[in-house]
Image (cartoon, rainbow, N blue to C red; front, top):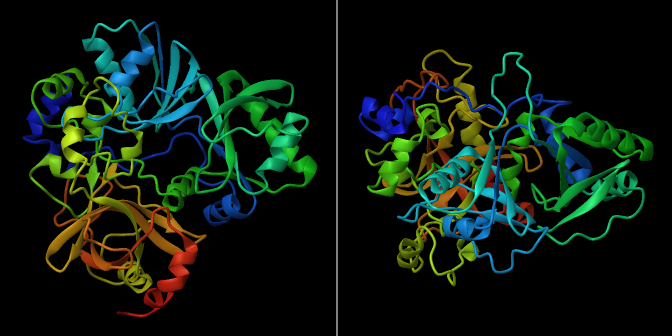
Length: 466
């Protein structure tokens, strides 16, 4: 087998292929699972300051050349009219049918040079579009580090660190040797880390302020040690965050990190893409987990309106992939993104089943049950499916289990629905044990998830049965 198409043919359809994948647990590579413990690490991004090592888990794709801007404007939905130097955007491509493929952060380093950072599906799609087109562009792909390197040396083009939290400005001033200029949101500027100048992007994860810095991979250990020493020198509690806590920060900020790429169906360009993708690609070896089972792979896809990306769309551009489809979708009805707050008693009941004889409910791993590349759990109102839970985990800050997903537009904040937890039949996934399904009540909440909203109207339901 040499292509995604051949792997799909072997399984009969992409749903069976993905639901029976042998890839195992989704792994954030290289970075230690915990530096202290994941509970304190979660608390630190809200109360103190944290250091995220983002060096290894994302692909990096450089696109440069005379046509770089025009090419990327055609491939992504984003408008490029205000994309000046030293800026960043959330880059989102879709298929000709309007289905989201993934997303990356795109940085503009020169008029003719861009760097994209994020998950593999978007990088693969951009590479394919360059391969089939006549654009004057050059691409360099630095894939994420191996999940299980088995002692092999790992090299990247760049290191990436994120420092954030209420005490982060004190650390920035120390490492910079003086006050740091105010960098506007999603703008890039230079700061000092000791004797070295580094690029810094202003943004935040889990709702906390911070900067992401990067530079040549060979400088990684020097930069990291300089940051840690600076925090010690000024008495700031800078907490290094391991991969267990890192994966949960999005539950508080509301970004859905791994929607299923909408690339497995369609004729023409989509068939050509499946023929082009390798049998070892993310799209071929990834997995779907969860209670939702459909014969039609398109039922797992999402569009930009559902994920809250509609304001990115550059409608004034002459053309971009998926424009016609999105014009038909924009007036809906489209599902909407929400946070699901899981009922405490139901979560405890599921956990308790693992301490009893007989077949238990599906295990809930803390802080994040990363047992598949993409998650699709049914969210029900009676016998009617009202939505899909797509990424879940536990927030020690909020003291509750949360998930992010999409629901029918008729669903209102505060509605209580039932999430179907567990898979209806045993699959070939090595990350899934024998279990039985059950219902977990979930209260529909705002995204990003707001603690004060939960306390105002939802505290009683979390401790008492409805």
